[in-house]
Image (cartoon, rainbow, N blue to C red; front, top):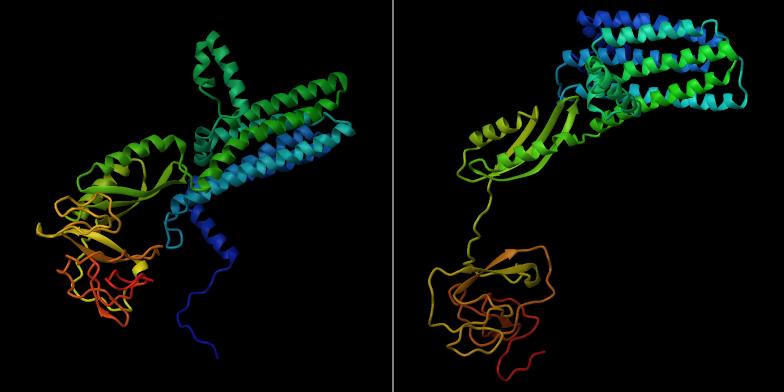
Length: 460
């Protein structure tokens, strides 16, 4: 039999979880207006799709996709309200702000896919152009325009409002901005409306409606049905050009990149942190965009051993919190430790000459009566050479430190007696020969691969 778990919580189904979260959002009265607009949007989309089928107009279908995009924007607005209500959990420690970023990215990508579908259908219609019925074409145009503008201007969509300002301008906005500068030069009072740049969603709604009006007039006057396909391509290109910068911006946020416009401010703040009292080094800094307008970051700060950790942490957080709202600072003190001298004999199986460094440390007292031992001949009165092979120098005691790297050379050969008798009293020996004259490193009982320079004995 299996284990019986007392007081175990029942697992909710996916529908139950969605219902619970929807009730959490519906408790806020601000979401009631969004739900009302969403219901009206569904009704409007139903009528527009029927009129698209009756008129056989692909241009009106492309314009209807903008109304479907409005439905996605309303869902994104609901997700934004849900994010404000939800609190961080152990699984989502940074909160749920990235859900609204994902919603914006998905909405813009779906709008671009719809534009690509319109381009494909338009290319097929160029080969065989069907007849267009204009009975409901103008009615559907104004119904869609009125509802799109009313939705955009009545509902405050915080995620899309931020993305439309932060993302780069589309080609449609740039061309309209050039035209607006010329108009505002003649009529300065319009500068508050057209400059610096118009809302991209309002602009594409007006431009699409204008293209449909031109289509209606040309079909009514000359029965020029190909203009419907041309208008559909124009609306699809405007939709793709408007949504592409927003999808790129939201995609960079999802990839946790650092916004380019904050590089200078972050560098300035990090320089200020590095000059704080007690701070030795600022490293491993990483900053990324957590949500729209929210920066997160982590940084490692190395401080002096006598510095106050809490005081440094408070100053660092105070400096960076002006720009980075979610910050993780790791403080660690300087871990530099002075190595100690070796004062015990080293066993044969403990030392591998190719795995150790000989690091020189200054002696506590001088011994001027000792002659330097170098690999080059020198007079007793002359100073030791500056660059001598494997020579620690005068009055220096060696320290053995472990090293994982292997060296292609061993110790040098013995030349005379060693003056370094303050560490170990015994010298190196050849196996089977006993103790002989020692190397100046003072190691004992270490097998030598090169032999020793003993008078009367040849080296291998």
